[in-house]
Length: 259
Image (cartoon, rainbow, N blue to C red):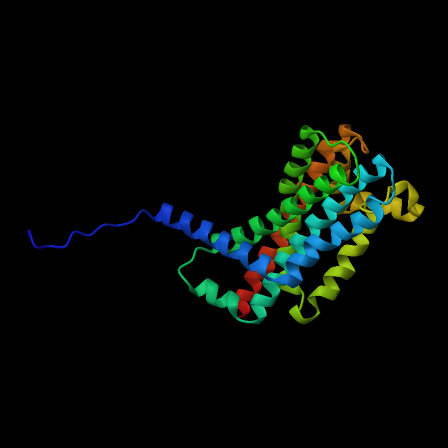
């Protein structure tokens, strides 16, 4: 008995946690190194902000566009990072390999969600920095933290939408389809200009869009939207999240049964 080799078993929970953390780290590094993703998701909002936000020479317009382009960057990170990313990995067979590996499925999904949220935070932080340094606007610490927290929580509904898109959109035509969906949503929700400047029919349908409710919460940070309706906006986004996750789960289960 003295020559027996002692067996030690590593707790399952810490091992799963390490797998999740490691997968998040690798996914974030992969997205940073994927220039087509990182430069477009970070670059487009910043370029638009430099062209239209800083050249306005108006502090109110600059603050408005910090919130608006922050929302735009959030949606882009989620829809392209999750929607297009998973669709491409599914077409390449990489998703099946991940599922067959010992890695927890939660690690794969968590890596996509956290990495997309991280890019949304990076975009928002850069927009605030540009607005304060080059635009000469005042953004208080409280406003900055509230906006960053909103982007973090607000990424969840668009993560759910990204998962559904990943299951339906062909990867070859993914960028075009996602832009066809997301750009009109951004325009009609007041990301780029106040809703009062849009046609009346767009103003009428805007409250039915999830992007509108995200924009209203972000704009309320700088006083461009009433805070009294915040609960309604959160409830709409929560309902949209549940609907998208449910649709994605049903689609995923049906395709697994058909395979």
